[in-house]
Length: 340
Image (cartoon, rainbow, N blue to C red; front, side, top):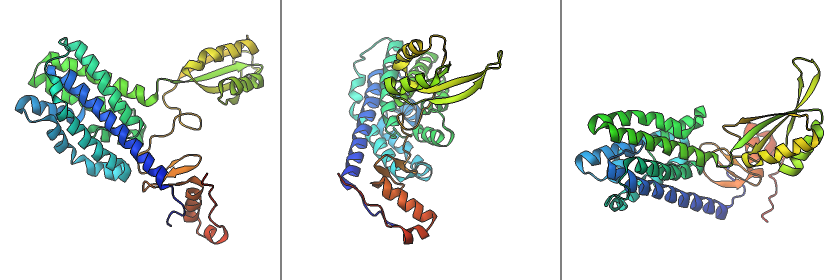
């Protein structure tokens, strides 16, 4: 069934924003590479690292080699990540390769002569660039594609997955060059992975709070009213007393923890509060799932379907129901959409 109603201007806007973010992320990657890594013969992660080894040994431009090495992975991206993601991968790979060669002049003269400081600065900048790409479901090509596949199917952090795959490249670096550049490369890669995950997760990290209190309804209402997040009430039992306990479970931002402390103390000073770090919080009011191009993204009004088109969510749900039960199409008309 074809889409009943579309929103071409909104879809074009979505594509343009994604394209702009892809260019910005890859430009930061290229600047960090040439400004801090290349002067000291450090390596970046993924296929770009292999291209850098080739450059150090033969003088062949990094961008050209990186572009050639990425070609075989495009088929893998198309199969597992979908058309939308693969198109972004092609654009991103070309952009990174071009930016690397265009900014190659930044490698000389050496901006920071201290190798360790250079590794730190380069790792942070490249990590920010990578994180921007990951956050908007783009990538810089190479092993990022493999990392994104593992993230999609096994929910593994992209930054650390790629870091593990890069360990072999570092070993080759230590053998071909020397141990010092290899160690600095490891430091740079670690910071790249850390910054990537920090940007993807966001600096406003979420915390999971468990509250045991005799005033659960009052605390739940205050959390909703003062912090703006809902809470879940659980039933528990005291291990020593055997008495029934009310447990409040809530997810709040890191910066809201102090406010949560005050709310609980004002309502029930005797309440027990336990706070845990969270890895992923996905759902209404929190982080949206990363779009892989092979599954639809739903919002309150629009949905990005499998083919990359943007259609109203009501229409998308109607079409999915018709596919599951063809008799619905005979009994029910397509929903009317308010274009305001």
